[in-house]
Image (cartoon, rainbow, N blue to C red; front, side):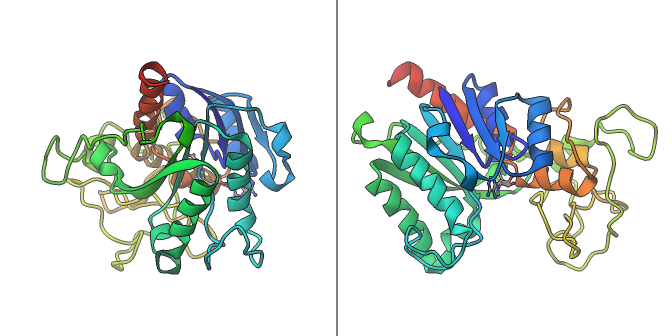
Length: 310
Ligand SMILES: C[S@@+](CC[C@H](N)C(=O)[O-])C[C@H]1O[C@@H](n2cnc3c(N)ncnc32)[C@H](O)[C@@H]1O
């Protein structure tokens, strides 16, 4: 399917959708480094601009719109009317894009916390907004480790299907392929994902195989817990070193933090994918991304719908 991508970042979601056989025709992000990374590895169709400065007329029509819209401004219900936080404008832009462009499907990704914001009122409002815009909407919380990603990352996917396509939701949310209990297959451990990498302090040819000097100390706090080599990695973060930078996860050797390359591998980016920018910016682009492997699974469902249903 043809896809328009909003809040595209470095392009984790887009790359997976493309790997599955879809085409991203237009993308946007405000971040210079993320768009440079996207351009280098994916394509020139990304526009670097604040979404608020883009007119809906300038966005091409497409069968699908995807977005990982930021949700920091969601402090109260009725998002479309709340104007006291400028960040709500980002949600409103996404909403207006769907309402005006009426793609067949939309896919939005967000953090788990969106489910509990306002005691659940925010997610209810989001679903109701999109139902009013003419969509059947499904909200699914996933642990990406259940799909073979070597990371226990929990994220929410909001999928919309235009009502005229059918009364029931034809988009089948992908079945789990892995499980903590080993069924259908065992979760993939961080060691399995990373053990082939050469020590970054030794000469090597890997791209972005450098690591943050942020001290490794174990304080039983996010980003400061020992990493168990036999389990999937904890969530790759996009912030949190206390100085405005990103807290990379400790390597399971307990001696250093993961390199940019290792973090990207945990997010299932291919090894040829090169991140552009200073170290913190690269870590942030990676922490913000949808794991490429899971995006590809979602993309395969779009391809199936194109071939079998539409
Ligand atoms: C969660 S990330 C999306 C990551 C992406 N889906 C991926 O898989 O790599 C959200 C993105 O929204 C972008 N963003 C935030 N405010 C924006 C704005 N006003 N206009 C355009 N993009 C914005 C950020 O730069 C960030 O890259």
